[in-house]
Length: 221
Image (cartoon, rainbow, N blue to C red; front, side, top):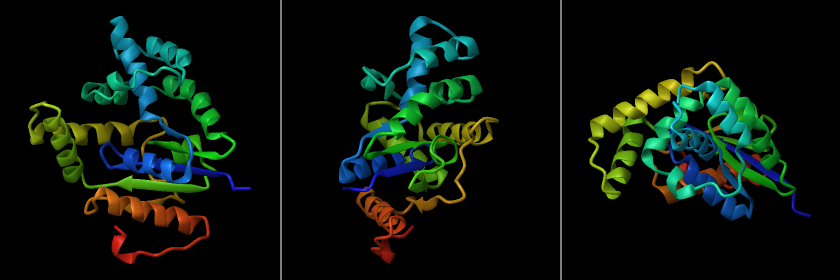
């Protein structure tokens, strides 16, 4: 019988953690949850109803009503919702409301791959493998800028960089479940790695953590 495998991946915006999480889930045939989509969904619900993002009670109610079924993925991936999600994500009441749905997902019989900002520290502190994926703010801003330009948006690189830094500050300084590397998480800096090299480095880290060491030193960040 295949051993259950739970992989927790944390990191800041545009570090590559989401892409790596999806590829690792495909590789190990595991379900994947991007927890950022939950906070985007809460923000989306507020904006759809015309509620303010500052309305903690409304945000908490939306979080309690949220399920994983039928999330409007295309709408949730739109750029403005990333910033809106980081606003509602600072509310302890919202984070508490979303704990159960995330932990229930983590209890899948075969395991799961879950990415976010507090997975290894709060949601799944006993995960089999924890990765903290990062990159410099400048590199992450360049990635986001090029992605937005490809989608026909004309924000300047300087504005995108400022937004990245603002979001990093909000995520890392919030009082409840701030973004930080778990003590037992393996660090992967993707600043100088393409996605294929980053995936191979991440896969090596997972395999090493599972006790099946495969070393590609040249791919280490």
